[in-house]
Length: 264
Image (cartoon, rainbow, N blue to C red; front, side, top):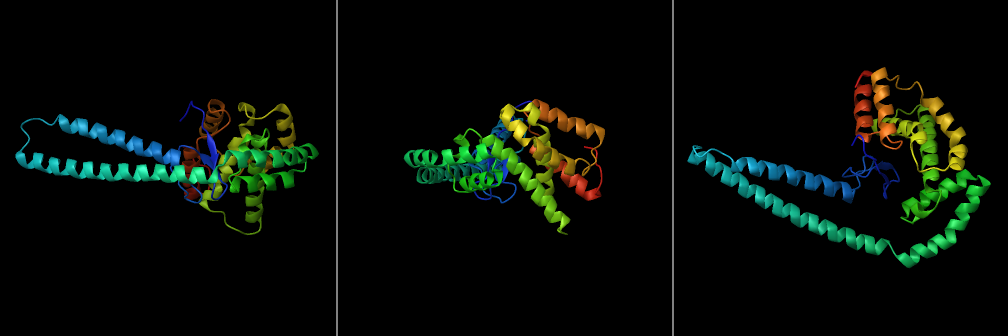
């Protein structure tokens, strides 16, 4: 994924953000159709490669071995057939859900009613109400992503979620592995704002105080080794302000084992 733009999506079930290539939400387990489809076709490619290798088995292989291979291939074909049926049913179910949940006329009516309200909240800098409306729209699968300040709200949610997690920890709660991954991912996304192209200058200025507060709270949390810090910085420069989620996840796994700085 390094060197390419990593697209983030919002989970319709829990509202968490994650990379669109993941087969499911890493926080609640809800299936992500696009990521699951990519994973499926990736496995099909592996199977195709294995089949080609089987085709090059030397002729001197024993009959017994060839018989075993034929049985294995038969099982594989059956499994692929079942997988194809499941994928087809999954696509049909997604089409049904999408057609049931998305209605262009209803979406347009929602935009006409709510975008002026969101615009006013943004103008007044009433960010608490603005973010509440944003999160509610995401949960209800409304076309909030078409609003011009969608990315601004997304970054503000990162700030608010991060501070809420830290407040829970301050109150005596032990944060989970997923919480720590979320903190690390949010930290580098906020550090990566200067490398992205999704915010206007005005939006960056409005975010500045909140971003500085969050980064100040997290600056010394993980005590990155120099090489690890350089790798994260390389990722956000190359990927328009986003780190690799998998890299964040692996770092936290190793970090939690030792409870201190970890070299990747």
